[in-house]
Length: 273
Image 1 (cartoon, rainbow, N blue to C red):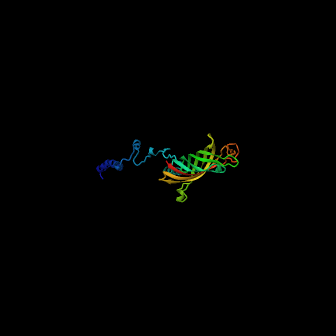
Image 2: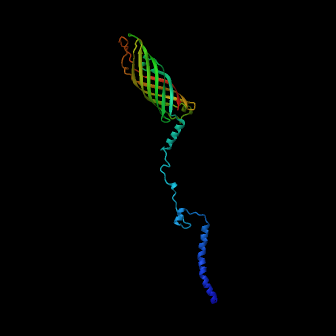
Image 3: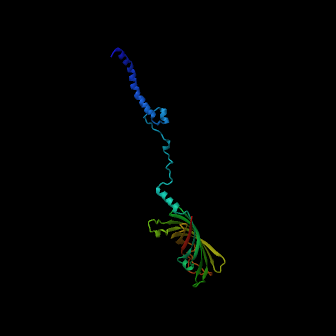
């Protein structure tokens, strides 16, 4: 190699070295420029080099304390409420008709007779309901004479009651029994009595507090819009004169005191709302 050729090679060597260093970076740059623009606004501001991932804060995934709010604490409570609104009832308006009888001494001096009235029930859930009712009946008073003047007259009974009803769970019994909807009932009543004796123009009025307990069944009709029911009820009554011996018009004691309670056997027709 002569001096001229060696001089030309020495002059080109720096250019060849620069090309070797620049060309790989240029190829990588061309590769990066041909890729889709994946940089976000945050990466562009930070001037993140290619191939480096930057975490992002998505405000939509932030915890919201109200997102999972539910007024039902347990799934069972929610299921019971759904079942109540689907199959239950809120109010029931009904008519009661039946027979009122008496026990102890009252059964011998008061005759049994028909009774009728109205009631309104409010349901808390599928099991419990509260009922406000009114009943009225008229009875004949007869105290036969045996050494005293016979006593005859009429007795009018008005009954205001506040009762709590509990319906049994019939899911585990046969379908025929489940359709009867059995229940028990208990509560209190205020009983007003008006007594009118034959030959006496004035009538006497008094009242007594009673405790009621009973049971019944309900048979739904018209897709649960109405029902036909039967109920038996026993009333523990404490009239003020139940320990006092009845006297005739001349003041002669008859030896009979009006002590006793009342019982009712009734049919019910209810309309559900």
